[in-house]
Image (cartoon, rainbow, N blue to C red; front, side, top):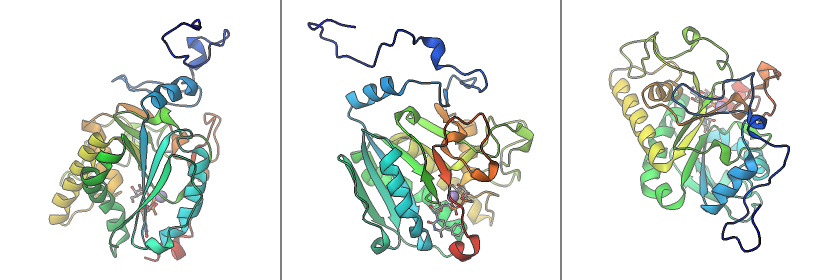
Length: 297
Ligand code: 2GW
Ligand code: MN
């Protein structure tokens, strides 16, 4: 380490037992063929990363939608985010809702804010899910660009269960869908009708990404949500809706605009799939839904 006269700030810890081999796993893919890291527990040093992002005084925006009865998820979502999401960094929670009075008052740590954004409701659930692209896009231009460096866009029917920190941040990132991280391309549930803007041919596509966790710089999220929304509108005019709604358009986007970082399914897990050995941490977990009652179709 540096002497007391050094102009360099002390960064991280120099444990003599630590070396490059320490941050490596042989049981998972750690990098894509286009040199994007795939983030698994055990592949990075959060002390070094925290120091780098703190120095930039980065603010992270977390967008979440709670329309109609989905406001019931906000309390657990926010409480667990306070414990696990971007601890030690500046965070703005952007809560899009049609029921602002139902947003719970959760105690927040320093440097963290809740911003309630009132939006309209759509009668079809598919539309509620898909319109997220349009809304994130328009608020990126109006507001997010002035307030945060990165956006993290997630589902609300979830709880944080372990650390989700700056290791996820990059220009453009997506998350491996928990059902498909070990599956072959042939089984990915991309939109397969050529008439849809979300169409992905059988011989294309790298991974199948989850609709419930993506992000990047505000500029990259702006571009992603713009393209996805435009694609949805073209389809809508033809009476087409992609098989998995916004998730299908997101997957199409990532085929042609490769993410610069990919998150392992640690970042979006569902206990219906058990807890395989490969998962050292379960960071963000789907809550069981009483579909009939909550969805109110
Ligand atoms: C209501 C009835 C049926 C389905 C959704 C909703 C609904 C969703 C709602 O009444 N209010 C609401 O705020 N939402 C928002 O849309 C909420 O943020 C929720 O997390 C998100 C997606 O709906 P969700 O979480 O019920 O659907 P999942 O967990 O099956 O989501 C996956 O597939 C979706 C597309 O079908 C999206 O791509 C999503 O990102 C995926 O995780
Ligand atoms: Mn969900």
